[in-house]
Image (tube, rainbow, N blue to C red):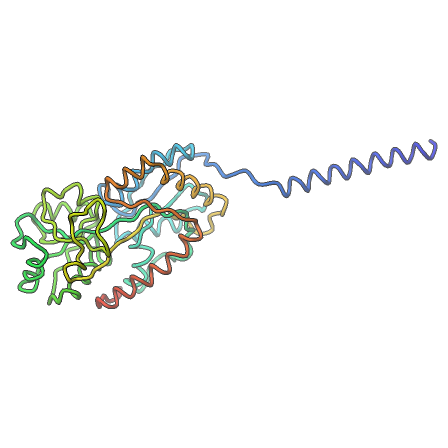
Length: 329
């Protein structure tokens, strides 16, 4: 073999080696394909069917399933003010197939309400904010008080029973805030396993008063008495309902709900679900449906959502301390 032939052959070999190395390097730096679920997803709602959280979650699951290409199944895991379902998702596999319909109760309030909780809010992967909602102060149809000032006056005269959806829930904490801000001697907190059973007790006249989530207020407003909304400003869907602050009792109970994934869920999985949720929430049809249910659509990046939670925890901690709400065992 002559020298020129050897050079050509060696040169061709070097070129092929370099080309192969280039392909490997290109593959290593290529943008990974977005995660797509290969089986149905489970969305854990931490309250019973029919409550405000459940209604809002179900309003978006069909559209989210279509966007992801897989069914999203709602699983209601109620109990302990939402902590049972939250803890179940905390222990779930971080594969994107089990998600939490998280909320202010479990992520921002529970750390102030209980000396020990069996999950770590900061370790959840924040996926996407979805919807905000408010609470309306309502009374059973036969309650003597017909206006908010009359309700305050009545509560100062005798102890009223106040339905909540569990010790430490916004309904419970809000009742203590009402007591503190209005100068009421005492109230009787009557805990239920969710907003739906608490609402049924109110409709049946078994309790005097309750904060109804805006979706349930819209559904049952003709069967109860409406006093005021516990929000910093009136809601567009409830423009005729005054705020408690307007009537001299400044209580702000606006809350949010959104999606969380178990700790250590890969960023690619969380990003894919966030994009699907953001697309669904941006759809005018769902925004209209949320408005009909008394909800306010939320949007924002995963990072913004994660950063908002410590701020919410601080807000509720200060409000609860001011209302003298003590941690429970």
